[in-house]
Length: 78
Image (cartoon, rainbow, N blue to C red; front, side, top):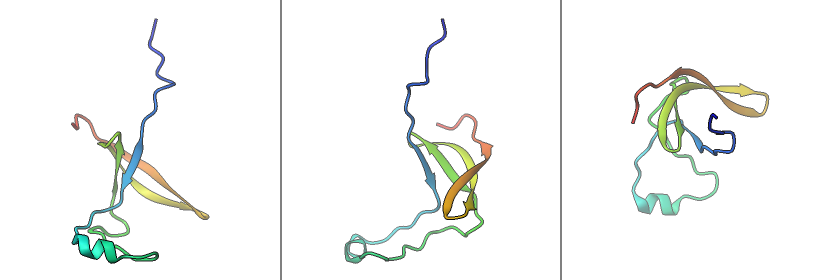
């Protein structure tokens, strides 16, 4: 009998880029503030499953929706 994994939930996150800013600057930010990231528009994004990197991808725009297309799987990442 094989295990049933259909009920297992996995949190998926996509990392577009990173930024380091002082806490006082973060606390002063309001609605509409822009945080500059360390990546460019066409850079690959990292796809995380339960906070672990599992794949690389690229941002896809379809109308007013944003998606991610998986371009490669990361093997042996811990």
